[in-house]
Image (cartoon, rainbow, N blue to C red; front, side):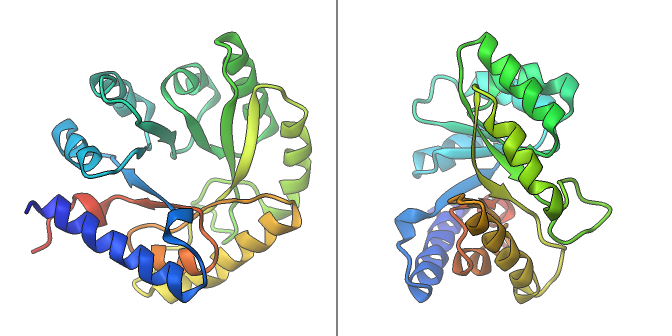
Length: 223
């Protein structure tokens, strides 16, 4: 049994435990494998093991991987890194969803490019819940205006919110940030919550995550 297979088995078990402890069904949580720096053969192995959602941080890296794996049916590619407006055309062509919407200008650009290829693109608004200056995302008070602006556009569909908690060795430190994102989503009638990574995804699930982003816990071989 390969280490990737073992890793996925371990992650799925943790998803099941976290979902059960919070009265949720494991099937309600999408496991997105973050493929930054991961070779195509490793990605193929993960897909063969049941992973269908893949997350990439950079357009340049995705522009090589997406075509290389285009013969595999059922893959859904997510753009999870910061997106500059000059990269939107490529992103709209490559990805099936964008998780880093943070300005009205970006929303307009995504919708315009999507319209040009007859696509309605699911998007997640990135919210800087922690207030860290080093993180992208809008401040919570600006969320309503962005939702109104994005809602007026025809070729994007806001599925939910995304955030990244501050780095910590203790997963419990992430809980307040996940709880706040869930509160914001509920206030605005949004169901999608993309939050939680390799170190804190169980806490994110307990707080309502519908998509978790897991890279290291899948693709890194344990000592």
